[in-house]
Image 1 (spheres, rainbow, N blue to C red):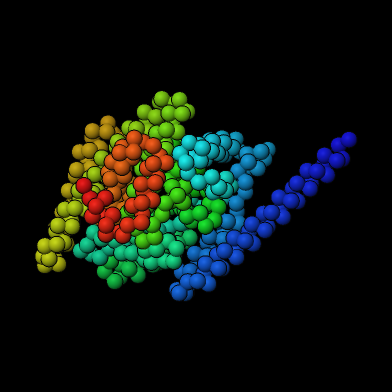
Image 2 (tube, rainbow, N blue to C red):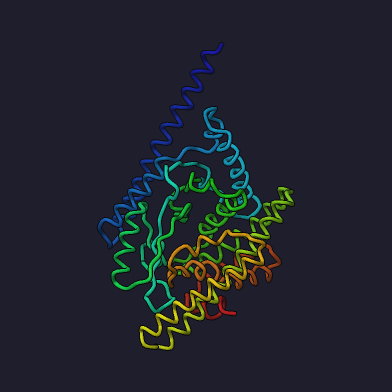
Length: 366
């Protein structure tokens, strides 16, 4: 009586393997098709394609990892939590219901990608790199840390301010079924769920060439979604902790944005280079001093101390302006739609049809 059941299980496993093989072949074909359309060439594209394929090749269905008796209990618990958050994203937040974040991949390292950011020595405006599909973005990503550092070194030698930042998660904008990554699982529950909401928001609305608009939209979806997710879980302590963390984060971002604005004014003054360098360093010194005063109000919370364990430059301010510069406008729009996410998404889609200059002038600016 046991033999038919065993045969059935074997058949299901073989079918799953066949499906997985077909999915991987399709993924390879999609990458090759995309590369065939690119006017660019060289090692950068090869490393990007190889890195993406490595990530995709390691995917396993989350349900299978959870069910595997050899899965460590800590990993199983994290995957169960984020699976519930993934369902909430589609059912309650109106985010795409697809295969993204329904698989898991262990890439065997602390970060999946390293991004290079750069500005001119006397500018707070980020250098942009332009690619098909994604458009122009304010970073250049590498799947290898040494490659990112080498590219950043070349930019520094040309006089650019640069910084390299490790990235634990990214979105392919729905072109592939993005997996959950081992690089994400060291985060808190709130940060893990929020990242899934953020990355799925990119699949819902994305404007090629407008990083500031895209990231601010995804950030407000992340924050709103996380608030609703934690309320649904009924965990008041976790909700209070996240709200306190968000408040500290906003205060820190405000410091960075204020520094960026003061530097922008300095650079507009067209002072002699040595004088501008002195003013520049003075502003970063002021930032460090103001942070120490802010930290004192946080009762010793030291979560941003690492930020000052390096020589600072304009490029360190790029993420703050990219992710948060347009954020107040999106919060105002969400309030205007009474927090109704379908209406909010429709309004954002209409904004996405405008030119970037129209959005910057009529929407993002207060």
